[in-house]
Structures are given as C-alpha cells and as structure tokens.
Length: 351
Ligand SMILES: [Zn+2]
Image 1 (cartoon, rainbow, N blue to C red):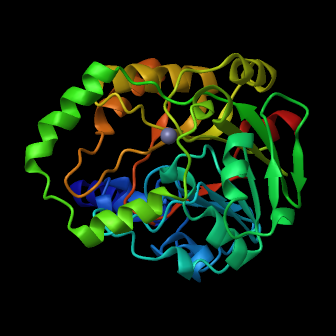
Image 2: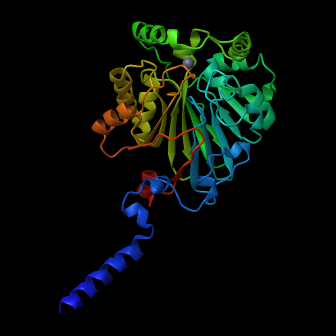
C-alpha cells in the first residue's frame, strides 16, 4: 500500500515537472532571469548586441526588444523597426566602454532626442547621417543639431505642447513637454567635490577629446523648461512606452497626457541627478505615480570611470512600496529585455 502511495506521489511530481516546462524557472534559478519578462530561444532576445549594429531582430514581430547602451540611451526594436532614444555613444576614454562606437550603428529608423545636453545628443548628427533616420527634438536641440553635419530634411522640431502626433509604420510618437532635472546645487556640489580628489586628472588628449564631444551638445538655459521632451510611443496593438531622459518634475503637459491615457506598459525613466537616495527615490516615485508603468526601467544612472553611479535598488524599493505589482528592471549595457507586447491591458480591454 505504502509503495503504491510513493508511486502516485512520484507520478504527480513527474507530471508537475513535465508541465512546468522550464524547471529552473520554478526554483527561481537566476540563470532563467532573462525569461521572466522575456522569451526563450530567440537570439534577438539573448545577445548583448544592438540590432542597429548588426544584432538579430526578435523572431516574433510582436516582441519588443529593449537595450540600454548607457546614460539615457535606449534601443527599441519592434516589428522590424529600430528606434533610438537619445544618441550619446562615443563618450570618450574617461567612461567605461559601451562595447560599440557610434560609427558601428548602421541601421535605425528614428532617433528621438529627449534634450540637447551633450550626454543626450552628441552622436545624433553622425548616426542620423549614417542611417538616414529621422531625428526629432525640441527647438533648442534641433537648432544645435543643424549646426552639425546632417541633412536638414532628416530633422524635425517638436515643442511637446500638443497636436504633434507623429505616425510611423507600426507605431505613433507623441512628444510631450517635460522638464529637465534641477537637483539641489548644495547636494550635487558636495558630492562632486568629495569625488574630485580621487579622480585621475584627464591627460591633455583626454581633455581635448572631452571638449570635442562637448561641442556637439548645447548648454542653452532653454533646455530646462522648453527643451526637454518626453515621448509616448504607442505600438499598433496599443502597447505604450513612456520615455523621459531627465529626472525633472512632472509637468502639466505630462499630467494632461496621463489623465487621457491612464497608464503605460513600460516606463524608461531617467534617475534624478540628486545623488542622495532619499531624493532620487522620491522623484522616482513621483514619476511612476504619474506614468503608471507596469515595467519600470531606470536610466541615466551610470557615470564616468571615477564618477558615482546612482544606485537603482533604493529606487526599486521605493517604487515597490508605491506599487507592489510594478516590475523593476536594471540590466547591463546592451543586455536585452524582451517584452511580449500582445500582453497589454489596452488590448485586453478591446477584446
Ligand atoms: Zn541634461
């Protein structure tokens, strides 16, 4: 009798094993982490290679592949299209390498530049020219861009103040006026001064390199209030991506857009430059309360070799207190995050 029971239990265990598919997922093996919100057996969702530099597209056209190549840069790949968010790739030898150069980017359909500071737009002209992609930014951004080598026909200016919905095959882009971060000076100066004695001084070559890179961005004060654009990207199946490349306060334009749409599927949101975890976390919570993303992917948290990265864990803890269901993601440079865009609330509601 006892043997019979053991046999039955063994059978049940075997059945559960067979049904679970990937056993490692069941036991929370970190090696299965990429499958949590991704898809298995798809080179387009496994390789740490940007599709714009020759990596594979996801197999399923409805899969959205997101890769983070440093700072507020993202590469979005969906249905055979490549969208680059910001363009700051050749950061110079004072930064950890990203594993590719701006010159390696051969294919992109669209470049959305959130604002015109150097660390957001320095490679927009060259990558735009190499790829033929349309480059979109605020007036102060495109003004600077047009002083560089790029066909003006490829450049489009938006204000984010409404009535500018842009249609592309398979998705739309709505520019929304955001606001640049204004971290408290006493905090940022204290951190910057504390780090100074530990930074290796730049060699004359590095200083020259840095000046050349900086010349491809603007420091116009208009960037703060009229030059920082958030972009709402809506895929053809209703899946929404909200992109904001600076950690400033939520604007009335953003509130109005969110009052209209309610929520987004993925938020790609810059961390505030305020360094102190209490301040960066507070801003992150403001952002996720405003945009209501199911998946929160922070950005702009990396730094120069001798600089201070802004930790993502305190943000994740704080946003989970505000929304226990939120999925938080932080990956290394170029590592893919794949999302099944068919699984989105808009779609479920229209069924
Ligand atoms: Zn900036």
